[in-house]
Picture (cartoon, rainbow, N blue to C red):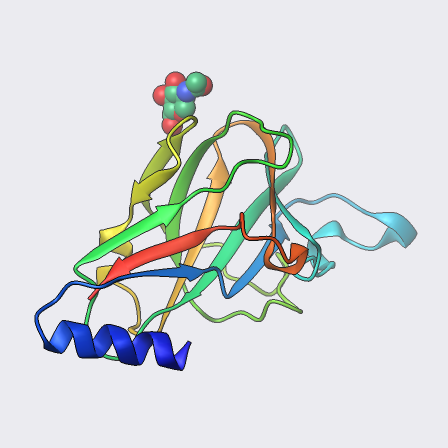
Length: 176
Ligand SMILES: *[C@@H]1O[C@H](CO)[C@@H](O)[C@H](O)[C@H]1NC(C)=O
């Protein structure tokens, strides 16, 4: 990572645009529902960040959101910021919104009970499109980090997470 951003900075200094493809650095499913899971444990208190998939679900009672965290260079705002959407695990046709949120969460421990639900929508993307411009979110990011909610408009959709070890995860493309 350090080498990549150093190269990006150098090329930016030379006036050459260098596109960086940054795979998601942290990702998690976060449940915001009043449901009870096994052993009477509230579902919204169970950390799911280290699972091999992330889920966005919107039903009558159930509500899960995909939370993504990316690392950005500590200096310089990206001129370009594109979120690349991987294929859903079962190839499902997704219909998603993307919202920017705070960076105050940890992948291993984040739950609906400890993560602020707030966010502001910056984009919408519908299958078969596989990328969406989120420059507004990058402009508003706190320089070194960017956190995003990815929400399904209805139903549910599952994606591979960072823990799957696969290449088809969410990726942020930026250019300094
Ligand atoms: C996707 O969601 C938008 C609302 O955000 C809606 O207008 C559109 O019809 C939906 N597309 C499909 C295929 O359901």
